[in-house]
Length: 484
Image (cartoon, rainbow, N blue to C red; front, side, top):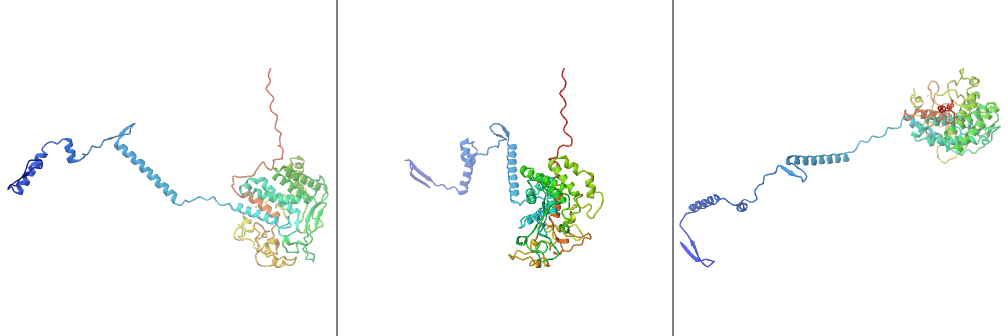
C-alpha cells in the first residue's frame, strides 16, 4: 500500500507499506548496524558515541623543580599523613589520660621533729611572763643561758640545714628573744659590773601559805602575785654561762654588725665579772634545790671558748686550754653526770631515735610527735583549759591533779623522760617524768638539725671560725729576681 502526501519542503511525501515480516525487518536493521560499525569513525564520531576515553596513568609526577616516580610520591605523601595522624593520636592520649605525678619525698622524721621542737619554744615565748622555765613560771637564768648557747651553736654549724628546712629565721628569732632578755639582767653597756640577775620569781616547794611559782598552779598570764628578783654578786658559773650565750649568739647575728657587737661587749663584761668575783651562784639560796651548780671551772672553759670564737682574741684560747682549769672541772675523773652534757657539765655531748620512739615502751618523749606520747605534761598552760575562767593559786590544783589528758597539746615539748630502767609514769604532778625544760629542748633541737635533711649538707665549717685569725700567718711573697 502506498500513501502519497505533500513533502513539508514542497515535495511529495510517500509512505510505503510493504508486506515484509517483522523478522525480516529486524534482520535488515542488524545488517545495517554491522555495515555502519565496519566503517572507520573519526575522533569526533568516536567521542560522540563512546564519550571520553580512558587515559593511561603516567609513571612520573612533575613537581616543578623535580620529576619523581609516581609510586615513590604516593608512598611518601601517605607516610607523612600516617605519621601526622599517629602523632596526633598519641598527643590526644597523653593529654586525656590522667598523669601519675611524682610527689617530692616527705620530710624525714628528724626534720618533722625539729619543726615541732621549735614550736615548743614559740609556745614559751608568747606566754605572758616572757622567758621562764617551761614547767614552772620561775625564771632560772643559769639553765636558760645554756639553752640559748645550744641553739646558737646549732645555727652556727648547721645554718644550711636550718635554711633547707625553712626554719633559719625562726630559730634566729627565738635566740634573739633570749639574748634580749639577758641583756636586761645586767648593765650591758658598762665594762665592769658588780651584780647580775640570777632568778625572777620564787620557787618554794615547802607548801607554805605565800603564793610562789612552784606552789601555785596558774596560767602564766593570770599570775598576779609578787615575784621577787634575785641578784647575785658572786656568781662565776652563771656569769660565764651567760657570757657563752651572748658570745655564741654574736656569731649567729654577725650579719647584723651593731647587734653582734652589743652581744660581744656584754659577753666580755660578764666574763670579766665571773673571773673577778669568784663564787657559785646557787650557794645559800633556793637555786641549789632546783638547778644546783657544783662548780664554775667548766663554765670558765665554756665561756672562754665561745669568746675566742666570737672575738679571735688568743688570750681566751690560752685560758680555755689551761690544764689546771680542766683538772678543777673534773675532766679526768668520774661523777654523777660524768660524760653527760647539761647545764652543770659542759665536758661532753649526747644521742636520738630512742627519744622519738625507738625504745622498749614504743613511746615518743616529744609531745605531738608520733601516735604515742605523754598526755599529762607537767605544764601549767597546757593543763588548764581555755575556758575564760581565771583560777587563783590553789584553784588550778584540780587541773594539776586531774587524771584527764591535757586539754592543750604543748607540741614539741620533750619531757624529762624515763628512768634508767625505761620506766615512765605519765603523771602530771610527777615532774621527774613529765616536765619539759628549755635547756633539754635546746639540746634536742641541736641534735635534730644535725641529723635532719640531706646527708650531703654537712657542718658549716668556716662559720664558727669566722672571727678567728689564721693559725699561721701568710708568708710574704718571694723577692723579685735579681737583675744585674
